[in-house]
Image (cartoon, rainbow, N blue to C red):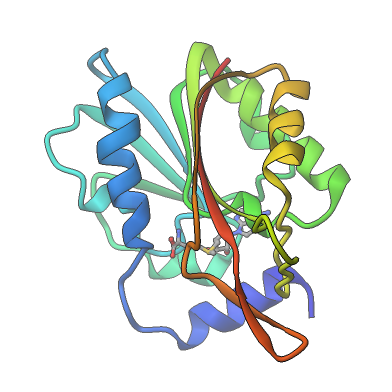
Length: 202
Ligand SMILES: C[S@@+](CC[C@H](N)C(=O)[O-])C[C@H]1O[C@@H](n2cnc3c(N)ncnc32)[C@H](O)[C@@H]1O
């Protein structure tokens, strides 16, 4: 089964309208204070069928939420948010520098192939206006032990730092918290990965 089939299966079954609550806190505490202009254009990556921005109030913004799962996009609510079926590793959608913010809703961890990740970062970069922001909350490897999960790429903080810089971004915020709550069983032991919150600028 490939990653798209995996998520389509998931969206076929799930009935809950949800997104990870940590994304809401991350946006409110670490991203929103950096958005000073009005009439923002925002792109959310990996929204599933319910964008985080459905619940963000008092934000003057034109929001597009994308996901490669056709089932998720078909189930999305009719709202002021535009939902679109887009694969972030394909370039067609990303041909114009028009977003003030690209917000990753736990999508990048799902890109498991290095060439695909290179394409995704290039797409994010080219879709941002000059000085536009990219914000992401990512599972990273814990300091001790190693975590792996199906359909996920979990890098170290240093590997991610290099990946970000090599794609031309300037790092504004790079904060690691211990023990994200995402776990993996390695040789019978439960290992938790750490969580990286980052905000970078084009
Ligand atoms: C871990 S889920 C997160 C869903 C939701 N944002 C949340 O917080 O619960 C990752 C999402 O990214 C989507 N996704 C994975 N790879 C993708 C890709 N290459 N392009 C677009 N969406 C992708 C999946 O379909 C899924 O909805």
